[in-house]
Image 1 (cartoon, one colour):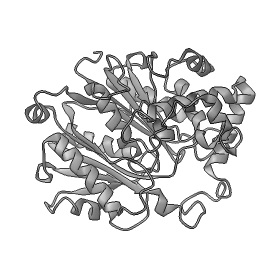
Image 2 (tube, rainbow, N blue to C red; image 1 turned 90 degrees about the horizontal axis):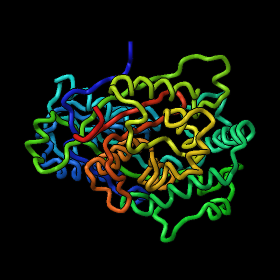
Image 3 (cartoon, helix red, strand yellow; image 1 turned 135 degrees about the horizontal axis):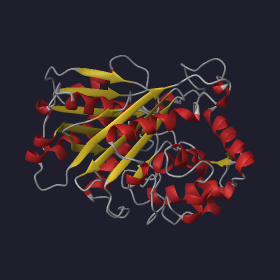
Image 4 (cartoon, rainbow, N blue to C red; image 1 turned 60 degrees about the vertical axis):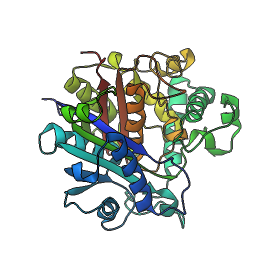
Length: 391
């Protein structure tokens, strides 16, 4: 039996996001408030319309979600804290969509926020890691993963740099991206940047930044009533899995988890939606480090194993390509504050499906996929579609 969820009658009512960046002077509750107010305005709603809220953040601290929700008012609605490392925002989206699809709520809010600039003060990795990998920073794991692919498949640093340059150039067109270059970034520029962990340079690694994003989901009829002239975007399906034991998988890297996890999660989501990778118009994946995106071309089913480099050579994942990836710059350029990252993906996916992604619009976008891995121990894949989507 599939573990994927199919959502019925659930539409995106509103989206809101503050530009990611180094926002040390802005209180975290204010970031959450601003993103939430933008989403409420986009939905044509107020907090009084919200039946339930799912608040996602990684930052340690008691009752941060409740404190953030108090910025909007006091209406007695239930608030649930979601935390699944990098996957937090997408899991909050999943739970909000599920609440509406099940009939438990007519309108649900998914709100994510974090301040990595607070969490990284004082250095170190922080609490919560397994002792086995505590001495190794994430960049080292991803660099080892990249080196393994280079050894086994003949992948080159230039191919990784081509993906990174594509994402930097997409980020330059996205108003909410952290890294917005004032010139066209080339693969040569990416390769020439300071080395972090070979082959990964600073331009191949995401920034540890701050931000907030919010998505409001509601019954389809309510969304049509509030926004009658706007293209309708539906939540179609979601899948969430944790690790399945395979011999030696711990040593693949606790940060990324076994590759089978993403593949199985994608298959469950496709099955639940009655769609396949061939139906997807635009995709968003976990690309905290550039080599991840190349791996996920294959693991999400967009090409056969070992053929990701061919997609790069063809320009298939860039502007005008057959399957554009990370059109807002991805984690590399848009940023990766943790809790709101997945909701930022949904924000961009909704803009694409509404036809509102100025400067980076994917032609005839019908179905969007959003994928994240959390701490190497969970993976989630989510599908959204507009009214022109494949059946």
